[in-house]
Length: 325
Length: 250
Image: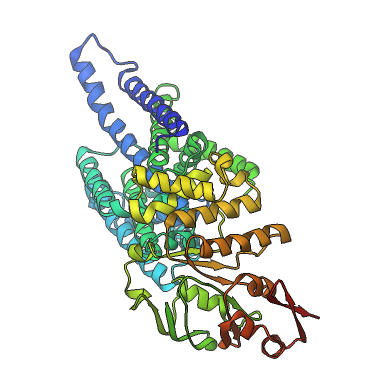
């Protein structure tokens, strides 16, 4: 069905894609010295991986957030509730605490990424697959478990930092802030492969998202194997968030902002459009944010600070304006 | 459809106790009974929303748990009262979902025609492009029914369709139920609280008490002083209006 509303939405998405392209071009080319090809190549080779990482992160977080909200049937939940941020923080603190900042795991980015993905992947599978079954497929219990685990992880992490060597803590702090700088090409390729695999495995469930938003009873009436579908999607969302977090650090709060911006702009139930919109918003926010961080603030403030401040204000705005919470 | 020896326990308390009955085709069957009698649980089990502990729900000779979800959804539609749709959906888009079991989201011109007919049947043409959350309760209910019609199933299960509706909308709802059966030849099974709606608009009544079937039969057999008094523990008078037995309780 190609209604006028649908065409209008496609038009909006095309405009957004153009803005994404423009901001990506701006990010690559601002203040590049074109007179010397050596300097130009150097600048581009520094910026290209960061840009790619931002695009991947935006897509993973944006898509996962929309899916997560649709599963929970609530548009003000954020995938932060899944506890992946605090788990990431805990893993890194524990590594530094046990092995020190000079250890292989802390220094080698590839190894750190592998450890992060493995631990978060296992935790996600156990928590969000096993417990979901155990609690008779009650999504709210899963959220509660996520919230409790978040405090548990944070408490352990705080305890560790209290007894840690101050110098080590100083070094650690850097890796606990989301950053796009220390991601190498091997990690990029691995993340892409993982995300593609998740999407491929979930392709059938993703096609059911539109129907799922009608609610459990109606979805079952229309022939959806609801519990199994929700379980798979929830696991997929958690893994997506885990990959993105392992790649750049705790950033999933971004999802709340971009998913809601996408819902506000597109006003549709079609998830194919919503996910694209959310991903595009994420790309624009990250790329322009990083552009400002690099050229206006000269790296003094990380982009996640803007996301958290802006996101917090936007979250309050959503709470106050949303009537049907 | 046949229900055999259905049992369900919650925390050791038996809420449905070896319930067996056969649902006649092409009729309206109402499940009635006091609160906690197990009628909604039986409905939930038949519509595969609630897992049973033991027993069998045979649909066209095969247990519902052995049916493929998709195949079953072409034969059995469910409508419950808990539809809090969060999405921005127009009436037509909602009705379109009724074709999902057939089209998987990719509608053929034939599907579109069935959708248009369902919307016409529920007289929703002028609201076709309005958003669901902008409609009144009665209109939204009709949109949901239009979706069920588009789903084109032989059986329709309705869980307390008159709940939260005023007399006007509730009566309209029951008239629609009758039309689904008489004009479209569907078997409609519904849970009702109002005995008189059940008496006036259905063909069979299945009365529950304490997790068991107290009485199952044609309306006139169930709508007697003795049967109703026994089920509800309240005094009843039965009157006949337009050839239908109606009850007065006090």
